Image 1: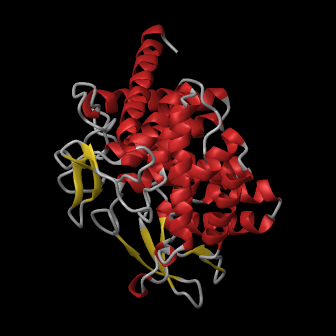
Image 2: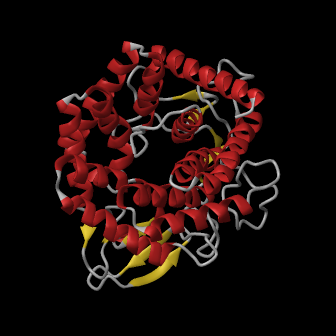
Length: 375
């Protein structure tokens, strides 16, 4: 790494960690989603993003050793478990991996706390319970009747919870479910050109795919950028756990498709196929997820093949800092501006999103030597 790049990385990472620490003094172990006028507002524990702020606390604790950050993360984790055990249980869905991997799994890795281990095991069982073995098998996404049979690309990033549980508890059933879902997703969600579908609806009885839906993207045949980043990061992780060659090949193909369609300034649009893509809202969260995913993929390739992905991740992080960073506004809570949550529904457009911040810091720390993540 060149000296100037290393200096930029050290400064940027330290500033991000300092901002997380400062925000923790005000919010503690809260659950966050999007900013309103630059401020994160606490939400209920059943929000699918509830694991990312405690995850940011743990990422920062790992670097600083600040016990207050660990305590706040542990408090949030306990609140998450209460959400699982009370009458909000029915609200949990495919995203329990996003809720419990950055919290319970990571805290167990850092501290060995058996309570964190138990909570992560409970979450893994809840995720596995969504598996439908029809056809080649799939994990159903949501709960309501009108959304039955829907499988989404996002679930690829929840599979590490199952792979972790299989290894930690020596129970291959978790791994078998994760493998089946990953193979199905590869077959139905990844297109020949490396772009991806967001949603595919399956027949619940036969397991046959019935239709493709645009979901949070522009159209069924477009390419939602955050889904693209979920996909190649998720397939890279599936390969890391399973060593199934097709998963690494899929991650490689989808990552190259993502990079080939990035605009010149380097921040992805909310959908690569949007008709107004040159002026469309950007999604810094897609860029942050992609940067961390590129570094994950690079580590799984021979050095000569992985080096271009490290360079691409570095460029992407620098573009995010330059065009979306909040260093010029110390009063802003977030690390990255200009994210897009769900444009088709008009939700959270041009705001900061907590998962964008999480993956941004995760990627900065990876570039600075971090090897063990919650995934």
